[in-house]
Length: 77
Image 1: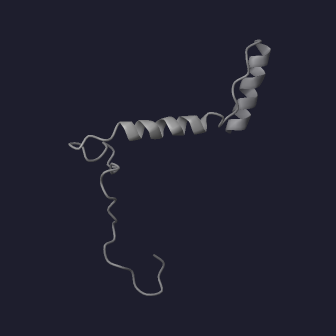
Image 2 (image 1 turned 60 degrees about the vertical axis):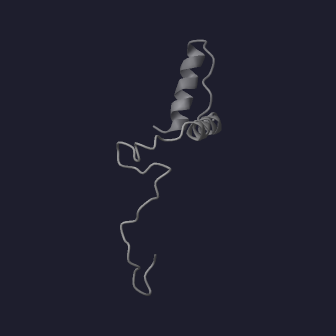
Image 3 (image 1 turned 120 degrees about the vertical axis):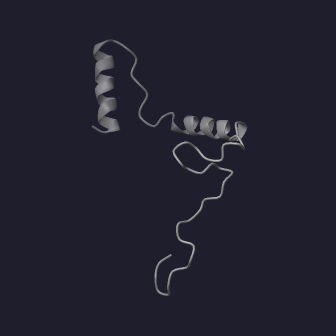
């Protein structure tokens, strides 16, 4: 079931129960992303913890590439 079908089902259930309809999917995406970005700007990572627990680099660490030597001529980079 995709988001539109779930929204249609939730809207139907809300109408049957005389409740307000839920917001459409994606309506608050911009606000959530803006809040996350604001949180990221105001709460920088701690310098003693350079990476997250799952191994992803923090914003202060440069991303390392697996391949350090260039590929041969005629190959895609």
